[in-house]
Length: 126
Image (cartoon, rainbow, N blue to C red; front, top):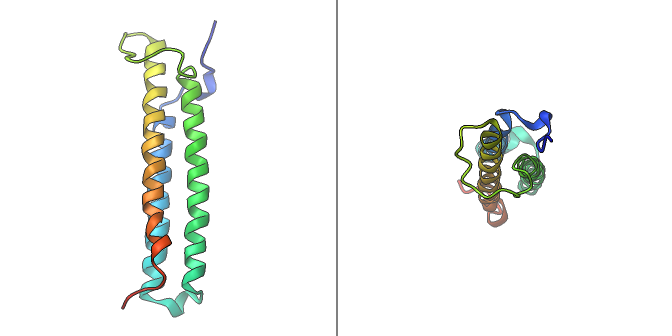
């Protein structure tokens, strides 16, 4: 019996959450930096920039939550406790699912911390 579906047995799932966090980081910080350097170039208020950061954060958190759900599914819904250190395909897949789940949690927290300055800053300081 096959516990883990074939479509999620890929190494790329391991990198999904950190890549989403990195893209979110770039969007937030580059968007804020461009706005603060040249506000007339963008033509928006800082509230609009903050709303854009909020929207990017919601999208990033949703993608990371999806990645975590797929990882949890790949891990077998937590039915086998770690360590998964036997030299079998099943243990490698379970280990990858568990590692992806942990990376998803870390990336979820990193996205929240990346977006937190937008909560507290109300304008650019020059």
